[in-house]
Image (cartoon, rainbow, N blue to C red):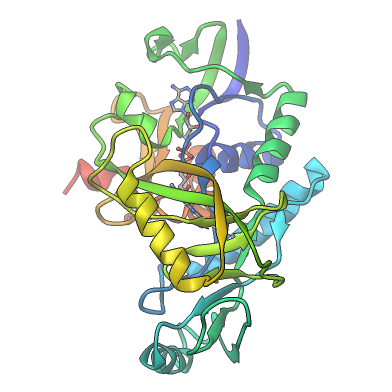
Length: 346
Ligand SMILES: Cc1cc2nc3c(=O)[nH]c(=O)nc-3n(C[C@H](O)[C@H](O)[C@H](O)COP(=O)(O)OP(=O)(O)OC[C@H]3O[C@@H](n4cnc5c(N)ncnc54)[C@H](O)[C@@H]3O)c2cc1C
């Protein structure tokens, strides 16, 4: 029997950011990453502290940005790879009113750290009302992030390319097959619905599609453009365009209505020819109150869930992995807003 401090189930943002906490604290662990790739692998990788519909910000945005910066620096240091892309999010205004709203919001304490008052114009996309830049925004190279971290964990003997089989878990004895663990953290995204210990949690899928496209005229800018959806250059000659939001069509497979929405959005923004080379989709694990879910099982106190990262898997993932780790190791109380208990105790 091998003893480990932790088992992590799931290798998306939740699992990988929690693994980072364990790596930096010198804990022993195994991370189970099996089955189909989840939402994280199809995500855009955008890091953005502003809600771009109404130009508002969200709970702990600055703290989350600061935490992510530190986390990525540490990850890049031990993997020896670079996956942070220092390209800001640039919001194309739909009309003059939006630009005025941006200016008004920029003058507030909450938004001034995030909204630039310098407006840009570009040749190759439709932007007659101009473009505003989101300060402190950026992007992860998603492909490189996951391949670098997987490689590192694999080399260190932390990674198991296996589906975790709940039937083989003896939760009372804290044993899974030949592993005896001190704590187990479930980070399965929408896979949580198959987890017999946490399947009652109100995690709902929000399906997102994105396109990979080849553009006939290159954008030649170092930014993530956003009008209806995000558009940016990937390193393989393609551009990423997405993603959609859908709470209703939750079947496996590509939904034509989502593809139509993306094509119409891209045409509004980019008036030249393009070729769609790939269509992908994933299921964001969301919660009605838009907060992640963290905490221990009612019966098995060394069994935890880390889920509900929603549309902001990167910021929520890095920040709340740290919060959860401080809780599992030092017993620091969880903020009530994210505590699993909000669904069991009133
Ligand atoms: C189209 C799209 C674009 C997005 N863009 C962004 C963006 O730009 N920025 C951003 O911050 N967020 C973005 N998101 C949201 C983000 O992707 C999610 O918040 C995030 O992926 C959730 O991470 P997770 O680790 O909880 O779940 P997942 O990424 O779904 O990972 C869970 C993993 O657990 C595995 N798993 C489940 N059960 C088991 C088991 N029994 N054994 C082993 N493994 C198991 C699954 O196979 C999966 O790989 C986007 C989402 C979509 C769909």
